[in-house]
Length: 220
Image (tube, rainbow, N blue to C red; front, side, top):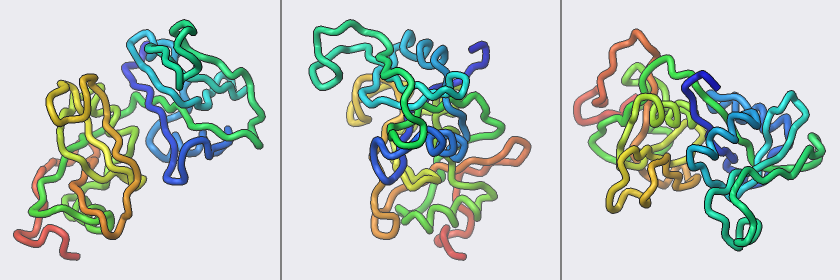
């Protein structure tokens, strides 16, 4: 807990409640995180986290399932229940499926929104970051940049898992609500839906936030 870090809830393109315990562990690793502990989730709740979907936690590899509620409401376990981290207890790690709560504190580099001349498909986004000497950012990297580097950008962009997100530190009109956070627009069609892209460049490599290649940032 002494590490500066951030908890982020995660589910894959398949949808909510599709991960068993081991798949949840793997999903966090793939997004540059690890399964969070109960203490980390409790700390996030103290800081105002409110999430209405249950997710796996590490907890000494026992695999408990919990979710943090700061604003009780009917659709989240009833309105008259107290605030707190709700606990489903220890669930069957193979056969039961939930989301994951991941923790990341590691950002050995910089996340940035790549300036391109037009919106991009997913494949074009991958190539644009590559042309820029970078890679498409992972979900954990974007959360870490939002929390640790205070990245604030009201533009939706592709991430490595095919989701569309954007980080807001200072909430404002038409930027997804009144709370700071990483906005999630889901998993659109990778081929036909066009967005910007968030790239990640490792520390020690110079960052140019514009696509290379003149008027054709995505030419292979």
